[in-house]
Length: 303
Length: 261
Image (tube, rainbow over the protein chains, first blue to last red):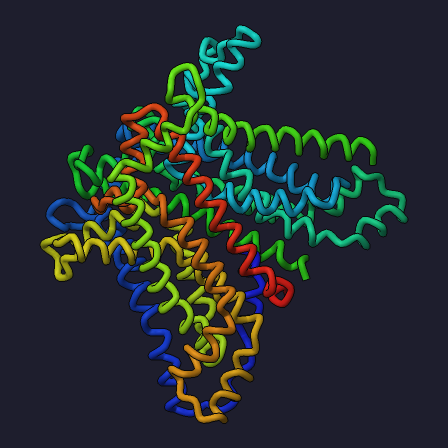
């Protein structure tokens, strides 16, 4: 991910010196499998759904499907719960991931902590899906280790407080297990980019630590922080396996609704299903687009 | 400064608790199968389950095919972009980011409509062609990681000099690509491969919706029906992920210094 910005800046590499017709033909043949693949397995399938979202069952153009996303109560509530969980897990994951990255990079802790944190984040950010749900069930489920320990040691049952792992906060807490590491992995290079000279310059000019952060560090870091938080949002918005394994179909989030629609047309309208998918693409597309834009902004300071 | 250090320690301690306690909890739970004492019974049951062996084997095979197809698609693309078609770079990078933007469940939904039995290309028609579709879906899923890994490796070597040297010695394109370039970006390809493996091995959405007997849907099934085996499976899955990431560090170690900008 960190290479994106550089990649864009190096887009205008020096042109080939010996442009011969035969050689460029080889080049085009060489990249053609990639473009055929992209067309067949990324672009056309997406396009099919997008077009279908604007058609009725007879194939005529219509906006009814898209309008129904806002009017049908079950669909609207599914989007709403998904958005709430994604916002909660992105904001909490973003803040806490930033705090951990800050602690490891700038916090003055022992040297070995940083590589340990980075390696663990690499693993934990990949440890998602069904096994993650199992891990949290074994820990915070009704007979999980933490639940039983709290009852044994403090006679305190977290389930008596209304907590439920198979709920909004339960799922958010579980998602944080891959959200926080992802934040750490992406924000650490940005923290590394804070030059010591800036800090020293502000100190010489009499700025307090707080002023340094308020007027120097944060204005440089905010695009990276906000951008990565948006990436986390999209990341949890499109997730399904963890939620499905954790809650079955009891929690009505949009990915689970779409899963049921693909399996058995629960909306009783194929084209409404396409509109459901379109809505997801728009939401993840906007947040990822904003991430890429903000990323390009923050990379200006990294060179 | 003192305060800052205390704050850092607090963050690290809370973080460590949050990340380590579920691992301990899962491991402890996986040992509880025999009443009254800890045992590895859950693991024994899991490893003896023929469906575990079949689905894990199937997913491993799919992962290996995904890596092979992914390398064949990504390496030539990255090479030619670097050498002759730099103008295509923004487009290629945009495409490789698409799988991060479009949720997996949406992509597979598109496949099911586009390649169903009544379409021009009925890939979901037979088991083998669906396997093929699953491999392509995994290639798409892993594309961002694979491309980034290979492209970073490709930038770290001087593609132009290597190519011209090989040309002067009379090598033809396939030779250059497979016997000169490929060995030089081997570490990058391997780290892309391990990342792909970690992504694909327990993947649920694609395999489940394409109805293939993969490890992810098996995990889900066990989770819905058993008590202690899921915890054992989670421990196994965590170890597999850890192994993949560890191997990336091992193969990437020599190249890391060179790859840094």
